[in-house]
Length: 265
Image (cartoon, rainbow, N blue to C red; front, side, top):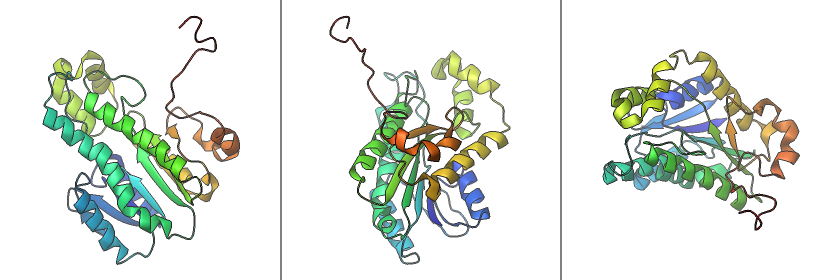
């Protein structure tokens, strides 16, 4: 497969780029830091930069089989009413705008693949439940999930699947940021969790890779618009549950209402 990966200079993005390349896929890496191989230095929060990279890639590849959006930042950390509004704006620019910009820029190439194209995005902590002191990151990642659902709905008659992955707790530079900010800004719960987190990511990353490969494969064709948790969901069974899954609200962002609403609430 021909795969473009954003945020491929560190963390999960780098791991996936290396692992998928080792498995024989053609990988194009996009990140703010210079890289070797078929790669581009790119700020995903800059539409013109992302669009320019997509056009350069189109000069070498006539189509794209998959896009994996891994680029992301976590800062600012701290109470929402005390963080720098410009830092808030930067966070949304990278996490939310960057995801949309990449999808928008590579959409023409994805449409040209002969197989069913795949788009995989990454969610983060705070996207499905409140995460105090990480408002910008949580809001941006929640937006990513809703974007995935929106595009899946728009693409129902197209040969494109898009899903989001919740990778679970993995020790990365973001974990180091939590430790550096300390309890005062990150909060006691977040700080203690980060302090206890194992730095051995091998088993966790292997699961992330397994889910990514499942979503990239033809066996996942037709599964779209879902948020799938690597550590908690039985993603190995997704292909067998495709029809049931796509007829339900399972693995989506939804408002929960009581069956007898209007009587008690």
